[in-house]
Image 1 (cartoon, rainbow, N blue to C red):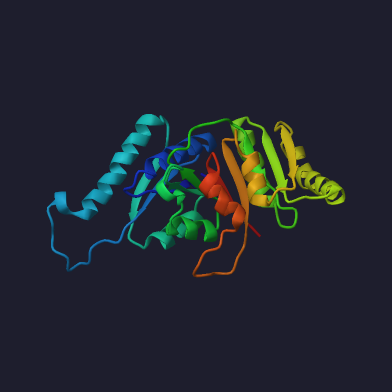
Image 2 (tube, one colour; image 1 turned 45 degrees about the vertical axis):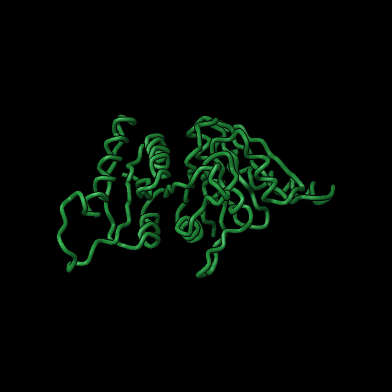
Length: 269
């Protein structure tokens, strides 16, 4: 039995859309779904409360109701849920370590001020050891196509593996974009390098149509201008040293705020 897809849930409106996206992905991959609600329980000295006032009761009720909703909406889904008595970030990072991927919810793009990514999401995206998917509350199913950002100066193997596999499972096309190529000579060299990076994956997934895109725009803009019409955007994240302030880089930062679809951040060696 494969590793599950994990999804972090809480009492906010972003959780159900993320859980339903994760449920569809679990069915697509024939995997279990694991709901995680990180929760700091009251101390043993805390007074006993009636269940209407007991926050532990409402935390468990949240999971029970969401599990029932998911089972009703997605027949055949194998789903479990658990309260994890830990701080949220370490609990989610541990869940990600044992999962095929971790799915998190983000506020919709109409959020006042446009700030969609909280500190929890930022830390998990920056330090997760497995792919982390950010699902916006207002994401709607688009196409089966997948867009992947390709960095020609870094490792792409895990990013391209995820992107080709996702496109194949969905029956969609793959758009591979490299941004920042400028000038005729550097553009030609970049085209050759992009073709070389994609060639082994094209051979492994011959049924996936692939379109290559090169642009001289800054990487964040180039990726954002290529993503519209896709159902998924896949980006790689270089390994970084532990830092109290998580650093995502401009492309990932732009994607989680402005991409028109769920964003997958894949850690690369």
